[in-house]
Length: 87
Image 1 (tube, one colour):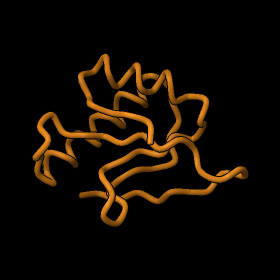
Image 2 (cartoon, rainbow, N blue to C red):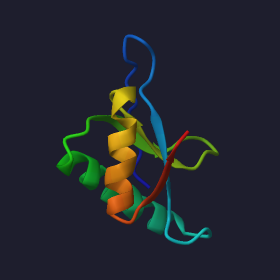
Image 3 (cartoon, rainbow, N blue to C red):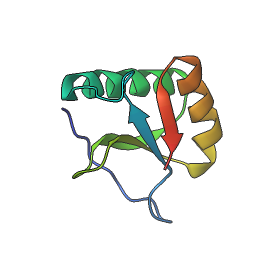
């Protein structure tokens, strides 16, 4: 699974969005595909990210560049059929 660098912002990190596969028992490949799809959706919605991937034993996640983009990001992901929540 690709992992991307997470760069700190002046005030810390942006909002973390946890991404889930379509099924609760998704494989690493399914997680990687869903993560890539989520990045594409956010990019198309002009929502900046700091990075994403699987962090240690945590679920797959994307770090938004700005915390204030979280509601718009969650809406865009939901409309694309991606299971996600702010964490």
